[in-house]
Length: 209
Image (cartoon, rainbow, N blue to C red; front, side):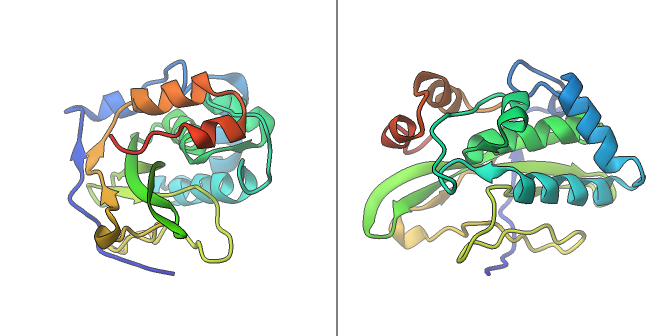
């Protein structure tokens, strides 16, 4: 487990409402998304508590496609929910859709990481979310990739430190991109929509923004 001070995040859009809107990929008004969002947060009026509940549900209840060796590549939030799994990018789409349905501004962030420590020059993009916490008047990054031995991401509430799945290692060329995107990055969407099987997607993941 590694807890670190967050980087200075830069919202792409000037208005918080841009981080609350539904889209074809972040389909927050889809009936299944709406039903689940209401079910998870019905007894929790605090936005921060809602973020924690929804984040932990996506992190723990939706599998990472690679971890379970699934073949299908999911993309839209409702597809991830229906199939029960997704790559990091797709799980970020689902988390954003659920939180946006609750009126909580949620965007998309990316990291450039070493894909496999055995090949330290082989990099790949990694997707996660940034959530605006009204109680703290600031953005917080959350990584719903899914925990496993050696990977322990969490939401620490009003603690100013963040606990992501993969703290970057600059000496290996890893990068924290500071931009908070209002919609998933086109490079990511193209990869998910062009490569329908997990093995094919892994072989063609974007390496940087």
